[in-house]
Amino acid sequence: MSRIMIVIALSGCTVAQAKANITEMCVSYPGVMIHGVTPGTTTVDHVWMDSNLSAIQSLASLVSDLQFVRVDATAVSGISDFTFVQAAHVTIASGDPSSTLPTLDVYDCDGDCDPTGDTLSVPSTLQQSAIDYVESGSVVLDFQMVGEPPTNDWTMDIDVCFRGELGYQATL
Image 1: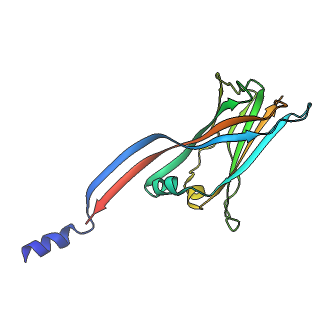
Image 2 (image 1 turned 45 degrees about the vertical axis):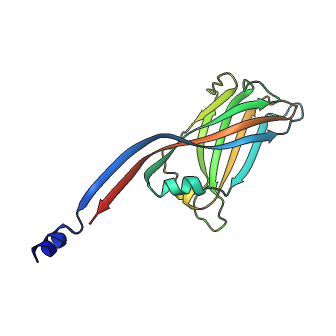
Image 3 (image 1 turned 135 degrees about the vertical axis):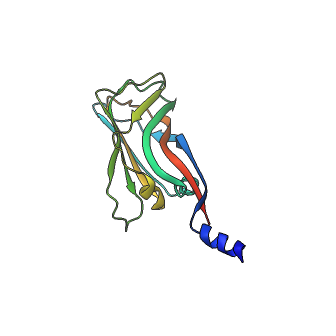
């Protein structure tokens, strides 16, 4: 009888708790083809939908806070660097047509874009959780670059990076 009382007295108590910082996790979009522009065009705009968020959705269910960190674009073919970029803007929206989530301006550089070698890293300008967007099942990303884009077709790899705090708690 005393064992039953002990179990009842402990119900609802936390018996194990763990937290781990996820310093960085990236979703990769390899081989993104960008068509060359006509001379005098100053903007390249690439929009795509990602409906395959199962891996990051599994993580989002365990994360107490998932923050946008940066977008990295890496030149693959047709260009060797991103020195033509004067500004870059990335927005994210839910791909669910019935979603009420707003379109967010998430990553941005304007006049201070600093490509390094074949990579352009665009930092997050927004401190808002990404969990609702990930849990919506699909996202629409719009990556816009302003400057003097190439007139030839080119390819880049894009990494959209996040950070968060993974937490686990067991209770009786």
